[in-house]
Image 1 (cartoon, protein in one colour):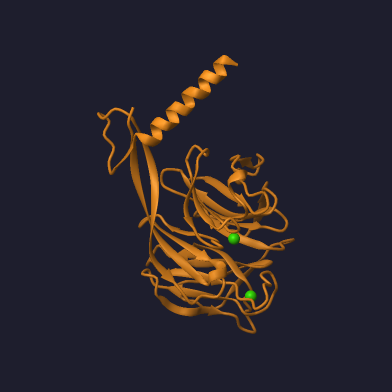
Image 2: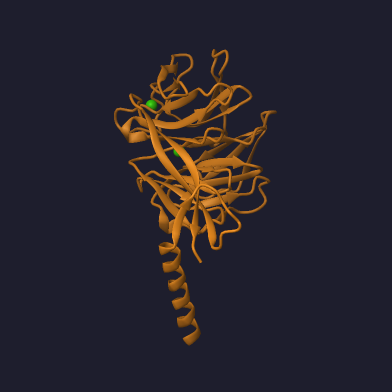
Length: 310
Ligand SMILES: [Ca+2]
Ligand SMILES: [Ca+2]
């Protein structure tokens, strides 16, 4: 008991020291005594208004254009084939180039477009029970990929070779290869956001409000981060260059950062209904759709090193 009290006292004393001894610096200096910690900060730089239930932002790395999926529903039917969804094309500075760049037609209906990704100059998007795609450079016919048993396809990500799709209702992840073959890997219940980064796959669960690393080979079960107590209903996840994470908590109304060791959670912004984030890792810009506010907020991410005096 005495040892644990002493340990606790030491931890408390250490925490106070860390908080009170903290100073900000732009660069590390190995000669200065004390600990250094990398901290991400965000600054709002623009807002894209005039959207209609925007769920996801995809970035075309070739020219910086943004694509925003608009679910569109007059009655909160987010998963009903209603022929009224569309995808907007937005300039890199956030001004809308073409609100209805891709719209629903009688022959190629678009219902509730959600997660998107770009692979091989094609924009892929989930549309309830199907994955659809269109050429970015010569948009014409909309292609359709039918996923057997899919009910509520939510997020899409790519590892540069395949397309990964989550199904929130059935708790499944589908990997669609370039040859058209489809396989499944183990996934958590009510899986929503998914992202691929340097051979790894990460995902978040809506109802379990937990973050997971998935096994892309499909052998291991999802490995939980153990952070469920921090969140209410998670929508999306991205990995930053230092292997830390960004997640959106849709019902918790917050944008959060998770440390690379998966132990620390920090709130970066409080905002209502943040959905499927787009991350431009070249320019460190974060595009956060606020689904129920009909807008996308653009943040600049910067990394600062905080110095803790010994
Ligand atoms: Ca719709
Ligand atoms: Ca989503």
